[in-house]
Length: 266
Length: 263
Image 1 (cartoon, rainbow over the protein chains, first blue to last red):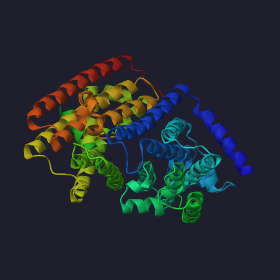
Image 2: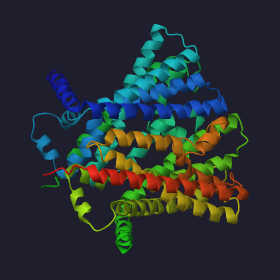
Image 3: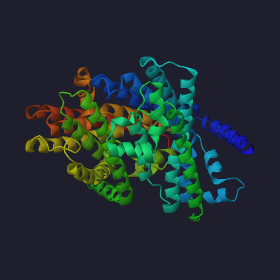
Image 4: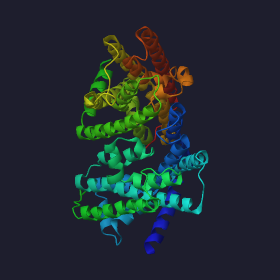
């Protein structure tokens, strides 16, 4: 419980510091809004030209897009410590100070940063979700709401877990490793479209290795009433659990990698 | 002139420094290219368009290859403005605009060449329908290369205008981000301009952002036929001249009212 209090406390402090320059903060948030709005515009324009993607109508695609951007930017908002701060902590040797404190490394890293500007992207995602569900005439039963919540929650942990890959590589190589971005940001760009649009190799990658499809597309397609792999209904409840599972594995690997950590000194 | 040339050469060499990072970037960019093409292929399978698929895949690869040309900026200048280091540059016996133009030109040229060459080789090896197609004709290739050079000059002029605006505020991130977004959306980085609605084409192809990379790509694929080429090049040259003049004016104004941060 203590850890949770600590986390909320740090978030409060960070938020205050970010709001010290309100105009700059506002402009940056606005920029985020336009950026994510632009991404959505691309989907809208593509749908304007092509009408559908396999069996998916424009409404379905907005729904998938919204689910991805809400989940991904929630993870970026709260996982900022892993993607932003951690690599520079390793490079400068600042990580040493975390090692002597009586808390876990991961807890401290997560406490060290938050990115409230992402709220703008989450907003665009929410609009897209609502628009998509309206256009595809989704029935909002309690089960569907619960399923969507589960999918977002599990997706959040999946993406945090994938962010940890970069942190792990970074402990070994000191440099921040751009290749790790391919799986996270690539996953985001790819899996804002339903996974059955892709050829087999990419489909396998995003189902088995980085299970975006299991965490997002299986439940979302169930909500839309067009199950993606033709699996039975109960699988939509089970498959998102792979997200937290990926995070758990990555956390173990991270702890293992930390044993190899050599300070850069200075 | 010699001063500008030596700045240019120095920056060229600097860009070749971190080759490991370049390789990582290229792999990422290739992966993104493959994902985009997979999506466009799936869309084409549902509803074929008058624009051949090969044009779209070629567009994606050229766009990915010259990604660095559009989106990279001189981060040092921003730091200099913030810390007051720009005072040293003001003392140099050179034209400040030209000095920074030469720097950014070298950065963008080398940065994109280093990435473009391996990527284009890779894209050429891919099977048909995935990879990059051959240019429409030999003259089209020559013209698109010329257009690419003009486009590079145009990007650099635009970049200097962005910098002129951001020099006025000490925290440029918000403003810079917004100008970069405009570039992303209107230059074809987000979505090939050829896939924008047909009714928009005449407007977006006239804007300066379309002169940077979109025009050379369309010359390469043959979307712009050879007789159209002089008009395209003229439009590019015109915009470049306008942007350079605007930028010079803004820089001059800034220089008069620039506040040096002490410390």
